[in-house]
Image 1 (cartoon, rainbow, N blue to C red):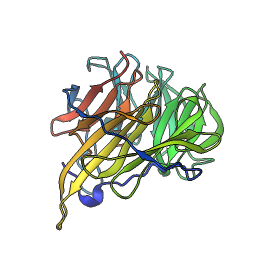
Image 2: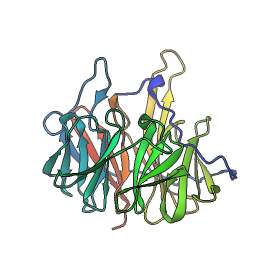
Image 3: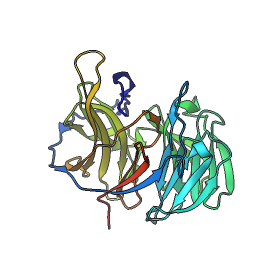
Image 4: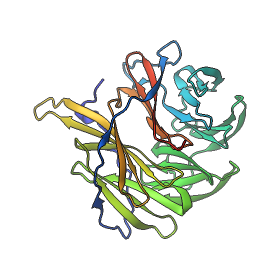
Length: 323
């Protein structure tokens, strides 16, 4: 399925407004093309879906990769989490108390953090045996309404919630206990840095990195696509300090009703100085099934994508991680 023009979200991961450095344009490396490893989970047999009439259509909202290379897939339609081994075989299913969770993270290798932004407005912590550990309120300092949360980010120092693609709030410390809420611009990454991204309004995307404490932008780069960039799908940094940004590129027709003529995702990898290392093109893009998390980095830096088609859910390992 393809997006209507007004359904393409021009989501902005806002950049710091202080001391901005003029961005340079990255030199694009040749497009990488290879056949990724793919697991397919059939609709209705393995994963649930809702084909919406008056509400949004739903498939699995989110996923996370485990340290062993297996995956946890949030099958919220069936009130459960699917736990797979590194070959994509289903190990177990973990029951959830409600179908309203829409994001999942894995912390300390054995604790799931599940977000329910709209109904209970809480984070639920569960172990990998399905035992609930604790539940905390999302709203508080830095988060006036839980529905404004746009991402959940697990780091070595705790769990952060991104708000309106603009700032992030630390809500759990490294011991996974509620903590004094720290607020930073952008997304937290390693070594006290923060990562920011935004669309420039002219079909390009700007990615910046700076220091959390001083709120300085140290480096910035402007990224171009083969097509106009409509959305920043994901933005993160791996353990080697490489920045990963997934861009939704789309070209619309010039006459009403302005259908999408072509669209794709570009997974761009930048080094520490924000010079482009590689670019991978994925034909799998957002469908009419609502998703919270489409792309992620695995613990070893490998690139993963959860995509939907008529057969079911595709979990795609694009590779490139540290062996």
